[in-house]
Amino acid sequence: MNDRLHPVTAEPDILPQWRDTPIGDLLRYHNLGAPHRAYARAELLIGMCMDNRKSMRIPDNFAFILRTAGAQLGRVEFKVSFAIAVGGVRAVAVFGHDDCGMIHLSDRREQFILGLIDVGWTRADAETHFDTNAPKFEITDPLHSTLAEVQRLRSRFPTLPIAPLFYSVKDGLLYQIAE
Image (cartoon, rainbow, N blue to C red):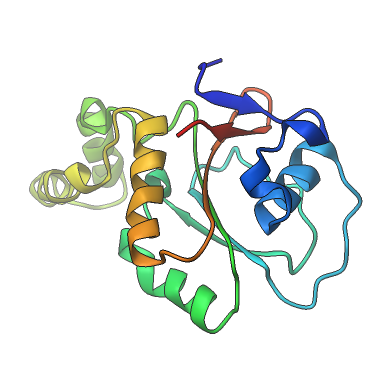
């Protein structure tokens, strides 16, 4: 595993800045199997990739979860703002993951186009759609992309704790990313 990823296999592994926050609770629930508490409202916003291989082990009502390609929240920032301003969350966790479909997306151009043709698109429309949108979503490194998104969100919401995390599809655990 990458040396920038810090595992959480016991309580002391949670970095000090996250211990007494909903981010620490997320790590306890998901990685450590902490007993679930009851929540009347969400305390955390989780921004994560739309990948279907990720499943969170968290209590009901604990978190809002926004799933977007590559965990890029810029196109849904109003929803982020809503969760904070109206939903009352006071912490955000953003996490990328290994084996993300948005990594080197341009290498999958023909597969993408053929997939749209299979459901009725013309080749020209599918090509235009890919060529217009793929550059907005393609990532080269999920750690770098996650850290960049966290920095972007911190500039928008400077008083909120916003944690960069990494989900391992291989073991199903969350890792803290060293900044």
